[in-house]
Image (cartoon, rainbow, N blue to C red; front, side, top):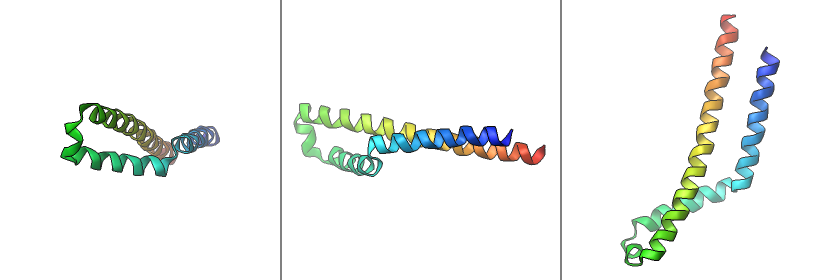
Length: 89
């Protein structure tokens, strides 16, 4: 059972690594920080079209980053549960 569970965990880890490469993870995190800073700038809101574009990109990046982090968290939790289950027999 352990080998099968570990194989699934490894497969999900590989998929997460691929997703992070696709997102260009470090760049995506930096870009989200930049967009968050722009949202704080009151000058942005004087141009509704530009504000809408910034918010659209910000929302897309935030959703992708949040989803990736949620998958990683669920994977970690699942791996811990597997270890606990094996310890309990």
